[in-house]
Every structure is written in C-alpha cells, then in structure tokens.
Image (cartoon, rainbow, N blue to C red; front, side, top):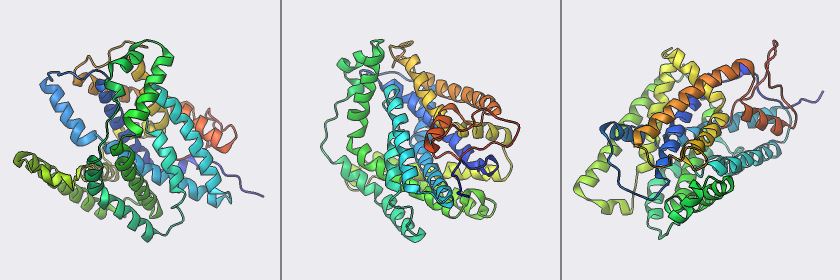
Length: 399
C-alpha cells in the first residue's frame, strides 16, 4: 500500500522547540509593537526612567534576537518536514515549494496589516534551502561558517552604499493613508512601506537575508544531529555554549562602547560586528532556556510558552492585526503618541493573553486556525481540526 504523507504524531513533537518558539514570538511582539512608535513624523520625546530601562531591555535582549532564533527553528522544522516527506516516498521539492507558495500568500495578507512582515522572507529563503538540503553536513558547516564570519564585513560594506530611502513611515503624505480610517488606504500604506522601507533597503535586503539564511542552515544542521531531542546528552556542550556566548556578547558590547568613547569610528568603515552581538546574545538566551528546561525548572511557565509556540503563525498574525486596530486610523489611532513603556507593556500583555488563549484553543482543537489552514492546503485535504477522543495528529511547525 502506498504511504500517505501526513503530519507528524503529537507524541513526537519536540517540546523545547515549541518553548523556544514561544519565547521568540514574545520578542517579535515587543519588536513589532515598539516599531509602531516609529510610524509618524520624527519628533523628540522625553522618555521616563521606566521607558529608558525597557528600551535597554529591548535593545540588548530582544531586538533581532527573536527573528534569528525563529530562523534557526525554521531551518530545523524544514529538515524534519523534508525527512518526513522523503520517508513517505514523496517528492520533497514539489511539496515544500507548494508549501512556501502558501506561506507567501499568508505573508501577503499579513503585509496588508503590517509592513514589517517576515513570512515573505521565510517563504523565499525556504525555496532557496531546497538547493542545499542534500549537501553533506561538513559542506553545510563550511557554508554556514563563511556566511556568519563575513557578516561584519558585509555590514560595513553595505553601510557604505549610497541609498536614499523613500521613508514611507515618516512621510506626512503617506501617513495620511495610515490614519485615514480607510481599509484600502491602510493596505496601500503597508504594502508601499514593506517595499520601500524594508525590501529594497540594502541593509535588510543583503545583510539581514544573509544572516537569516545562515541561521536556517544552522537549524538544518541541528536537526541532522537531532540536537533538541538529545539535550541531556549535550548538556556539557550546552553549558559551554551558554558561558562562551555570554563572554563573546560582553566582549563585543564592551568593544562597541570603547569605540564610541574613544570616537574610533574609522574601524566601523571595514568591520561592524553588530550581528555577531545579536547572534551571541541570542545563543546565550536560547542555551539558557534549554538548560533550565533540561533541569526541570520553570515548568509551568514553559508549558504556557509551548502552547504559544504551537500556534506561532496564528499568534504572529493576530499580533499584527490587533496592532492595526490600536495604532492606525482604522481603530483607536494612537499611532506614535504614547511613551515607549506603553508599547513594550502592551506587547507583553498581548503575548500573555495569547498564551492563555492558545492553551484553551489547543485543549479543543488540534491546530491553531492559521496552522490548520496552512496544513490542510499543504496536504490538499481537510485535516481534523476539532480534537477527538482518539489520538490526533499534528505537525511540527516550520515557522
């Protein structure tokens, strides 16, 4: 009998991966909601001490750490899905290509509400990953290492490129679209901002995508050694990684401050290790979470994070759509009028609310609503949404 490819059993789901996704989606919420404050004509605002502290927390512990971690987990999920499809005797290229096309459709919908959508990047880079999935581990390690090592030099080079951004999100003429209260104006604003203020910016188009792809390859490699299912075996490595990444992040952070203090900005013409700082901090945080998990700490908190991680796609899109009703002219029209602490705390509140909703939803249903749509369209059949008494099936997320 021909094997039918279907989602992986719930019992085979890797809990720590969902926990890490849950943590990452919190960082995404903080980053995106903080960015809503920048949609408007630039103006000076006096920040309170609380806002200054939360700004520092975002800058050093959250900013860019979430999407790099999600990129690693995307690569990890990519490898699992490819292996599952190959094991069923199906063509992984056709299946995954169709899956990325569907993801791009979700990305387009999400981009109507939020110009900083990241799903489109995953969809395109996911297709690029198909060119690498058959390569041996040593070759993948070499490619990944070259990309990561080159990032500071690439960042410095790209920073030297003359580019005059349109500035959709700060242009009064375009801001009228954002605050008009008309849905089509809002969609027009977000699509224009997505293209002009993100996609064609050299720093994003070249540097961010290079780093994102390197992280995906790293996730692919982690799946090859079954890393997240063997955390106890890798406990010593985890501890070394935790301390080493912490030391590296402190060294890079200190070096940046010394450059600023002594005004040696000429160094930054050739070498900007900012994303090394991002990566080392992200690895420090992720390895710390893994160590806490393996030691049986924070079980209740981690269980809630895992619920949020199982509905990453739904929660991500819901955060962005909710933001429209709070900040744009469609809803309350708060825009950039609030102090920074408001955006930060609102993101944390929305995330916590989503954790409780995710737990309730998953007690009744097998998938989040967007995850169910994506999977059903991917497998071209309606998967059971409502939980039955018998064992149900679900698939490890690839986002």
